[in-house]
Image (cartoon, rainbow, N blue to C red; front, side):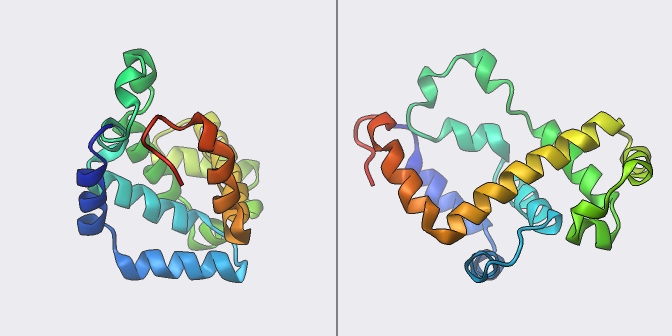
Length: 156
């Protein structure tokens, strides 16, 4: 079953409730999920022990091969945060203004490659779409759709 209880307790201790509420309100109003929000989520994830620590506490993760688990490393979180921090305030708020020369400057400032910046922007776009769906009541629909694929004992 994993250690869901300790994961919930850890989230309650680590997550800034006001910040989380602000994000929920922003999603409900239909205002965009931006890179600043994404960076805040990365910081909170790192403060809870990183992705690997959180995944270990989820049900069914003991059956996932080690090779798959090793794909989730915390160095990646730090690198993503460095890329976002290298952006200007305007770029974080409006990522669509990031053109080729800005991508080079961001890559140089974060000590990464332009491909890494492109990868982050692509991941962010996917996450933004997912957040938009969740804001429109898509989370409940998504959970109902996953019902048949959840491990025994987990239901919504």
